[in-house]
Image (cartoon, rainbow, N blue to C red):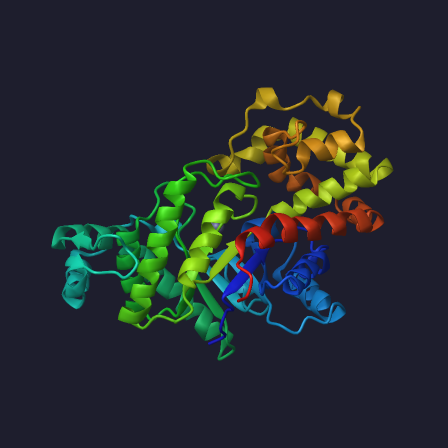
Length: 418
Ligand SMILES: [Zn+2]
């Protein structure tokens, strides 16, 4: 088994041009006492929209690592794959995020649930979990209900894991199980049952991505109670530590926070939890880098700014279609979107002020930011013209990409080595 480091950051790079800038953020973080390894993740959906292949992610990562002489581990994540989509990722990836959210709630035979209960009498009653303020109290009926809800999903994770394992033919890889893209959060007591079922399937999961309470909208801050999140995050960490010992799961099993970019109000709670418990975390930040590309284009002025405005105008015109696949993870008030005619008159500062995630800036517009977040399809359609402009404005873009990952993410989330 390939072992994932304690602190890792998922860095998405829609157009495979920012791997160096993202890696430079990790290098600069090390210089400031924070050890975090990069994991380049891209989902089947993103590849489909951009028209890219998993090999391009691997190539960009390898090139950045050589050019910057990075000696620590790094990985390429087949993000949100399932039985139907994993095949194209096998060769290029050494990290597989098995997405079983859509399998939650699917029916399993009653005999399977009875067998699970018979296998796990320890899940019924008062369960003392170190780090929880009160024991978990469960009944045969409550454990059976949780098993009924999640066992099809954990069995599905087992099927995907075994397919990857056989296709990798002995090459080591990291396994994540994700259940985040669903409507209802998993509670810490449910997480314990899920982890027991994952262990039963023989899945050596090193990261688990539950759905947390609160809204994790794309590219913008967390919406919900940071205190509530902190309590839930701490409880999940305690449950994981308990399950690792009880079910012989990998000792480095940790939480993975999806849609993790730009969730500024929960970064301090996360860091406090990590410092207090010594737990690790994986933070996925896929879309934030694409927005920094737009900021860099706008900052460069001239043709770069013009292209950034064109992306906005097209995204605005096509907003309904662009937003549809992301309906559950964005909240856009169309009335608060500036009309493209107005944006066309903007200076570089007006564009970057509206887009950059600085809530204290009076120009910041959370609606425009979310629309552009889902608007990368517009840039993908521009094809080579967009990529040429990325190269032309490389200095401004890479500076913004690196600064965003380092200053607004790594330094806020991950504890300093100590
Ligand atoms: Zn996710």
